[in-house]
Length: 250
Image 1 (cartoon, rainbow, N blue to C red):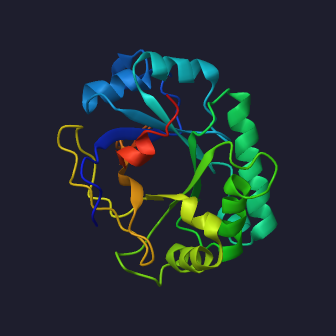
Image 2: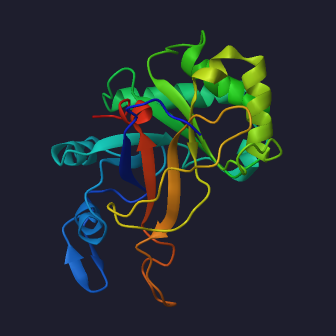
Image 3: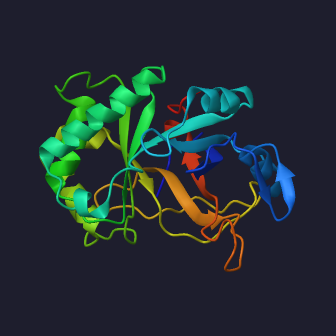
């Protein structure tokens, strides 16, 4: 995978918990999750937060911006596997426009990138086309924001994965799909500090190797035990290339 000369790589976090939420972790009180992340791993360049369920607020956005952190917007915490695997073109249009509506309510500036979280679920190629047309086509307010797909992508040059197969079909059928940025959540070598982040090597579909964000670790800041308050971890860790980072909410 080759990126243009001068491409920069930025380290970040994504979470369902607000960055400005206070908490106690391993008997230490922190004024915010952000403070805990900085203490444990280093200062993030960006922070991924949702527009729908677990939604970011203007107060949290101001908190992150005041700390010099850009915001990677994600839509999809409210989606379920049962729904997504039955969704087709019109569902994609509707979801894209809902994401635009929610972002505008937060006064997110035009051009900001919004990733649609599809997890590791099977998706119909027409649903991907609907999302792309909802962001770039003739739909109401299409073109106001930039869109992308956040999904499990199989091994490099693999066309058999559920997302890869549908994505490559949609890409060949609809020019707007080529405008959608890619955010891969595989492979996952594990949690690191900012200084020790891995070399950028995300998985990508056979038809497009230009992945712009890589979630390389999940369930970081996990605590053990049956009565643990954070058995599934609190944050995930990501690396973004500059072409995507430059479109985050800043």
